[in-house]
Image (cartoon, rainbow, N blue to C red; front, side):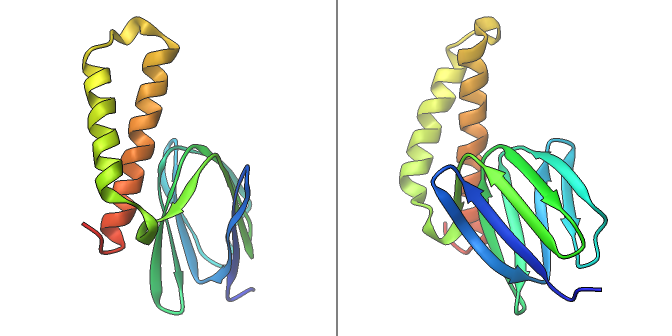
Length: 139
């Protein structure tokens, strides 16, 4: 059995993370799941949230938007629209953008269809960035 997991996080612009880790936690549409070495094969749809991975005793928080994860005994591959390390999040601008999105959500009807759904997805992505930043020690 493998003692590490090869983690790769890929966005449309290319790989964001490619590292060997001890464990991975990710946000699926049905709740968070964890992967340790020797994990059974898994395919999961992801929602925006925080991917946490541990390497050399250090936990790294990475904000991801919606996507997919494939896990196996020695590998986790995450395909996502966007990803950013929590330490790189510009919290001031993300908070400002989140406030604007919340105002738009308040002023739009839930039956507005795709525009409303897009605003909700945007809010989840902004929340994920703020959560990853907080977990990385940024305020």
